[in-house]
Length: 211
Length: 231
Image 1 (cartoon, chains in turn orange, purple):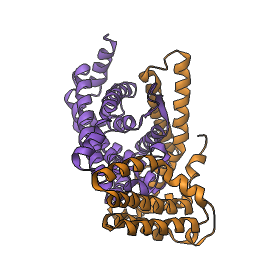
Image 2: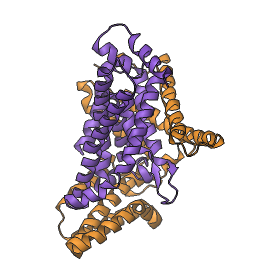
Image 3: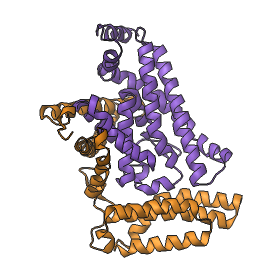
C-alpha cells in the first residue's frame, strides 16, 4: 500500500490495436455494452457478446489470468444471483442476467487494461472542458484529482499507525480509538495541504484567466 | 451515466466562485479518505470472518463534516475516479463495469446521501447553535439515518432490482442485512463528526456563521467549550 503502485495494478503495457485505439472509442464500447445489457433478451446473444468481449480482451495481450482477475470479485455474488434467479425465473433468464453483467464487466476491463491510469485521469479531467463557459476550471479539477491520489497512501498509513497505537494501549476493540485519530489526522492533513497550495498560489479561485 | 457526467461538471463549476485552496484540499483528502476506508478492513469481525469496511462511515462523515456542496464534490470525485478505473471501490473493484453489477445503486447512492446529510447537518447545527450537546447529537444521528435510508438503501434496492432483476421484496430482504451495521456506523460517524467540529471549529461552523449572520463569532465556540467541560 506504499506509494501509488496499487493504483496501476489494472494496466497491462502493450502495443496492440486496443492499446492504440482512442480513449473515446473504448469508452463508447463500454457504454454500448451497458446499453446492450438492457436490450439483449436472449441468453444466446448475451453469451455470444461475452465471447466477443473476452476475445477482444485477449487480443490486447493481457492473458487469461488477467481476465479471470477482472471478473473474480463479482463471481460469488453473480453465482448467488444466478442460482436464485434460476430458481425464481428459470435457466435461460438467469443465464441472460448473469451473462449481461459479465459482458459489461469484461468490456470495462478492456478499457482499464489497455489505457494507462494517467490517460484515464486526463480523460476524466477533460470532461470538465465542455463546461468551461459555465465556470468550470479543468486545471483546478486536475489538481484536486492529483491531491486525492497522493493522499490515499497517506490515509492508509494513518489507519495502520492508529491501529498499532490503539493495540499498544489495549484499545484495539474500541472503534472510537481506532477511527477518530485517523479522521483528525485526515482533516489536519487536508488543511496543511490547502495551506501549502495557497502559499504557492495554486488552487485559488481567481487564477483562471481564460474567461 | 448522466449522474457521473453531472458530477464531473459540477465539481469545478461550483468551486470557482466560493472554494479556496483549503476547500480544495478538504475535498481531495476526504475523497481519498473514502477510498482508503473502502480498501482497508478496519475492524475484523470475530466469528463471522467478514471484515467491516468503514466506507459508509467515511461517506456519511464527509457530509457531516464538510456540508452539502463540498461533500457532494468529495464523494462525487471518489465515485467518478472509481468509475474511471482506479481500483478504489470496496474489494478493489473499479471501472464502469461496477455500474452493471448489483452494488451499483449503493455507489451512486453514496453521492446523494453525503449531500443530503451535509445539508441536514447545516440545518441542525444552525438550529441548535445555542445548545449543543446530546440533543444535537441525536438530531445529527437522525439526519444520517434518514439520508442513508432514503439514498443508500433506496438506490441500493433500486440497483439490485435493475441489475440483478430481483423484485422489490427480494431486493429489500437482501438490503436489510446492512441495517445493523449502518446504525452502528452512523452513530459512530456522528460522535466523530462532533469531535471533528470541536477540534476544528471553523471546519463548517464559521462557514455557516458567515453565510447566515456576520455577527459575533465567539458565541458558538464558547458554548461548545462549556458542553465539553461538562461530564
